[in-house]
Each structure stands twice: as structure tokens, then as C-alpha cells.
Image 1 (cartoon, rainbow, N blue to C red):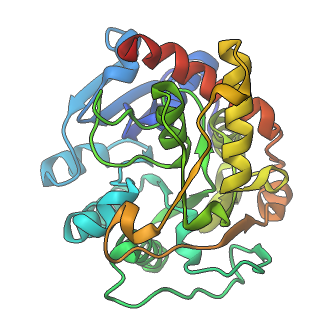
Image 2 (image 1 turned 180 degrees about the vertical axis):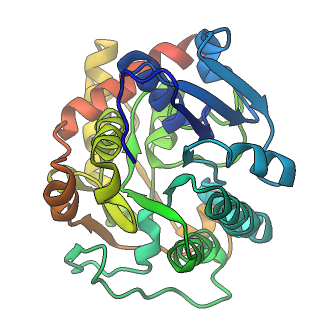
Amino acid sequence: MNLQFNDSSITVAVVGCGGFIGCHLLDAILTRTKWRVFGVDLDFYRIQHRLNDERCEFMVADLADKSVVERIAKYPIVVNLAAICVPSRYMAEAPEVIRSNYDHPAALADACAKSGSWLIHFSTSEIYGRTSADSGLLVEDESELTFGPVMASRWSYATAKLLTERYIAGLQNLKWTVVRPFNFVGPFMDFMPGVDGSGIPRVLANFSSALVRGEPLKLVNGGVAKRSFTSVFDAVDFMFALFEACDVAFSQAFNIGNPDNELTIAELANKMCKIFAEIKGVSVETIPEPEVVSGVEYYGEGYEDSMRRLPSVEKAERLLGFKAKTPIDVVLRESLTWFVNHYGCEIN
């Protein structure tokens, strides 16, 4: 497959184009290439400025519709970002989470195998399972995977994502690449509960919501778990490295993360409080102290956690020449600044 960014005959299908990652990828494709985009999603509020772009065609639909799946697979490149990925739903809606993260993408993979499309499927770093506090680097083709018991429904998302990866890898005639995001953060991430969504979003949006509302940040189980945070703009740069490498990326899974940006969740809370105080021009002492809550109390029965997820990024650097570069303080400042500007008026 020979992809040229100035080739206006190429159309890429982006499933989930209105989501957090999708809106940034859409902007980058339209800015950096002459490609056309066929975008599919159920919500387009993040991409209002692109809805009338002559290089785009949008469809309000999801992968539960077989005719939509077949339409998507007609295009030479298919990027699948669609998923239910809200932690609170893993326990409360496990069957729907599994359908969203296995049944629907498996059907799309089948269609792409028949049509010859290149499927770029976004998985998750959670496929590495129930990692311990002393876990080392997680390596795409080497790390062993251990999950919690069936009754711990928190693993509904991770196991569905892992099964999809195994299904994709086993399909004959499918050109595929799997992307495993490690805590992508940035503008337009998730939602503010009670304003434009319900439930509990991922940790960065969760903490941002509490800061804007003047509420204590909740440290689940003390905030001792560690995560590596990655700028969504670095993630978009990875996608372009992928497009350029093309054939080299077939039948490969890639971690996309920034191991230099590892923090405990308690350290994340501390940094975010300081950055928020600077953005608002107030003393950090005026911000409520974080509160410790149990995972079951906060998320519900069936909650468990991975204590550390530190990505090996050697493979992406070796095969694609890509390495995430945005430092943690820049990542958090750009994310929190956007959140304050976007939602502050909703609270005041």
C-alpha cells in the first residue's frame, strides 16, 4: 500500500470521529493531508467546525448496524476508535461494554478482511490486565496477561478488548494494526458529569471537574496506582508515523505512551491542584485537600485496579521512528486550561 499525503483520491474512514481522539485526528488529517474523510459517530459536538467541510462525509450511526459496517469497509483505510470506555460503566453495564468492545469491532474486522481495507484498531493498555505495583515495562509481544475473577466485572472492558485483538490477529487476509493507548489526555477529553454527560469519567476529566467545581479530588484506594500520561497530540503524530510506514505496521500491535510521564494518581492530583491554582491566579491553599475513598465505594461492586502500567515504547521507535515527547507538566497544563475555559462558565 502506497499512501501519499497529497493524494486527494484517498478516503479514510474514521469510526468515532466525534470523540476525544477522533476529533484531533480528524483535524490533523484535514490539515496535514489532501485526503477525504468518511466519519461515523453518534455525537458531533466536538467537530462542529468540520461538519460542512467539502472533504468530509459524516454519518450518524454506530457499528451495531451491519449495513454501516459494510459501508465503512469500502474505504482503503479504516480507523476504529469507537468504544464504551467509561470506567463506571464496566461494572454497571458489562454486557453492553462487551458488545461495544468485541461484537461490533469483530464484525468490522470481518468486513475489512473481505474488502481488503487496512484496519487500524484502537485497543487499550488495559489488555495487560491486573498488574502489580512492581510490574516493569509492558512489552507488546512478550508481557504475560493476568486478569481478575469473572465476578470482578471491572475487567469486562479489558477482556473484550483483548478478545478483539486475538480475533483480529487470527483473521486471514486482514491487513491490521492494533494501537494500545496509555492514558491519552488533552483538550476535549471525556465530559463533565451533570453538564454534558453522566457517570464517572476517566481520572483527568474527573479531577478537572472537581477542581472547577471547588470540590475535593477523590483518591481511589489512596491514589497509589501509577499511570503514564500521553498527550493526544503525540498520539496523532504516532498515527501519521503509522500512515507513512504503512506496510511495516501490518500485523503489529503498538504501545503508544510516554514512560517519562509516569505518576501515582496522588502525585497527579497534587500537580493538577498546583496547575489549576496558577491558571486561576489563586493560592493552592484555597483548593480543598484530596479525599481518600475506596474503589468499591466510588465505582461500585466489582471494582479492581491495575497498580502500574508502564509502556515499553521501543517497538514504535524501532519500526516507525516514533517517540512521544510532550512532558507531563505541558500535557496537564494544556488539558486543564482547556477544561477550565470550556466548563468554567457552566459552573459560574
